[in-house]
Image 1 (cartoon, rainbow, N blue to C red):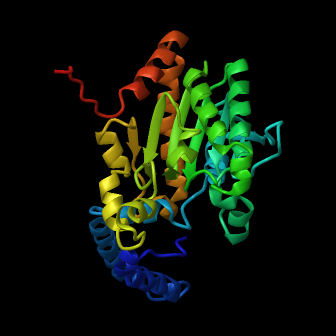
Image 2 (cartoon, helix red, strand yellow):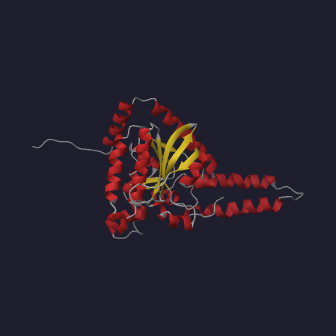
Length: 323
């Protein structure tokens, strides 16, 4: 059930409330207003399609951050079986902003690693709003190395504003932890599937995002910097310039697919994943199943070579000779 509405969704609120009121009013009564409800639902469907067919980069950013949006913990329970969470990095401690462990996917053992933002205010605070410390990335790397040893695929889920920039995180080697993950994931001798389920911010996202296949949900984002951060740097105003920055950064799933950064955009239910989490989980499961089946058929040498080439060719380069 939707609890919160974004500004651009307000035209939908009145219709949804009217439909809900009629359904509650007619429940258990002798008269029927099914036809009236059906007409309103069709009107709502058309209006919702109109609203969500032309979202701007900033509006999609708001969708990716939506408080009702399903978090990694939901998808882990819905898609995998027998999930056993593992804790700690064996250096410093455990970071609840990163969850990971063993699970079964269609009966096959896999390792799952994910950012976890939290579903309510208390959990958000406990999990640092999904912003990992170095020990979170070291825990993730420990699990991925375990996957390599036991020859199990790795599935990662990205949903973070970025790595935590606090003093303690810097003292414990935040940059080194991210860099080490990038290096080791590039060489990891097992298939890696990466799924962006919400907000993919900067190196904090990329630290568990070096995969053989990168998939994004329709209303998720993936960028080197947030729109507010970009606007603050370029125009000295993080609020006024954020909409322009969001469009300029090309951070949406559609933009990144056209640029060749990601491999597939996974459609969400009309209005976003939070409107029908069960349907969204089924779509994710089918997509993961397809890509994992393809990756498992590949020879390891080809898998690693393709992974290297995938990231090596990202971006545009101009070459020329000196005159």
